[in-house]
Each structure stands twice: as structure tokens, then as C-alpha cells.
Length: 233
Image (cartoon, rainbow, N blue to C red; front, side, top):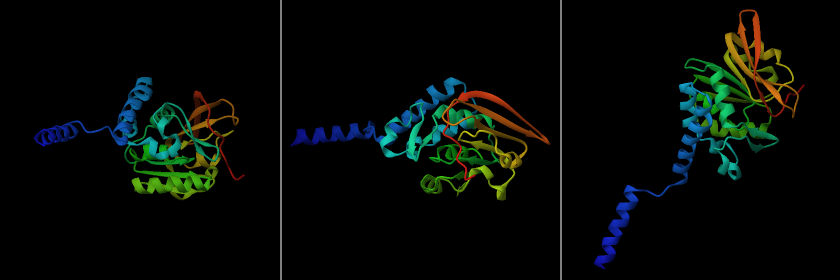
């Protein structure tokens, strides 16, 4: 009996000092590794972007049967023909709009809600629009639970969200064949928009759009593949 009690104490102390690796701990380690190896080591340097991506649990924004791959650098299906973008692209698109405290950002294509969550860690408010109702409602449920500074709308993103315009920045997460004029109109003077432009199911170009007074300029950043921009038109 004495031997049993001594061993029980030892086991208790070992568990206290070296707790079993839970799923939460495992995901945290995977997330930190993801940020270092897939994002920071590939050139993303904005401190607020890196901090946000270390904070947001990507696995919570994808279907349970996909969560084992949550922190790999690849897009994953989330249903209804849509995907969650690979972590590097999320980091890149976040950094390129130069987000900061005080910003109000419009996102077109809520999808899983992950990009909105990353932005919400940095800016004052995120307004995000999803046209696929089941996806939008699922994303809204998790975003409402975790963030007070995110507003989700089920609507056609082509028309933006005029009620809260103009926006300091706009992030579009689906490929459009051209840049929707309402989005340009709702971009604040001095604002930035990031949007993939090109034909559906082909290589598109990720474009940076900048607005300065009456002048709107755009430049191509990199080739990408995004799901098509869906509009009611």
C-alpha cells in the first residue's frame, strides 16, 4: 500500500509539472509554427498581422473533418463550393492594406469568417458580407461569439455596404472579372483595396487598388487562384 501511495504521488507530480498535451495545446503549437514557417519566413513582416495570426485559432473556422490540416499552408473546402484561403495569402492580404487601430474595413466574401477574425484583431471594426446564406450564418455565429467589432451581412457583395462607407480599406476574397464600381466609390480617399481579378477557375491576378482624390490606380501583385466572385446580377 505504501508503494502504491508513493507512486501515486509521483504520477500526480509528473502530471502537474508535465501535463498531457491536449488538443488545445497542440493547435497552439501548430499555429505558432504556421506563423513562423509559412508566413514570417516568407516575407510577412507587419507586427500586427503576425500577432493577429498567432492569436486566431484557424481550426475553429473550418469544418471538423478538415481541422487536422488547419495549420498547413493550403486552402481547405468549407462547403458550398467555397474555400478558406491558405494562411500565407490571408497574411499577405492583411499586411498589404496596412491595417491599424482606428480603421474600418469592408470584407467581401466572409466565407469561413477567418479573414474577418484576423482583421478584427487589428482594426476598430470589420464589416463583412457573404452571399451564401448558410456560410454567412455559420461565420456570424462564431464571429459574434468572439468579437464585438465585426458586423456580418448576408447580401450581394458587389454593392458593398453603403450605410457604413467610406472604408479605410476593402478586402475581397473572391475573384471578380473586373473591380466592382460600388467598391471603388466606397473606398476612402487614401484607402487601399486588395482584390483578385480574372476569369473563374483560371489563374487570376491579385490587385492592389489605391484611391487618392479623383485618381484610382491599380497594380498587379501576384498570380493567385480564388473561387469566383458571386453576384446576384
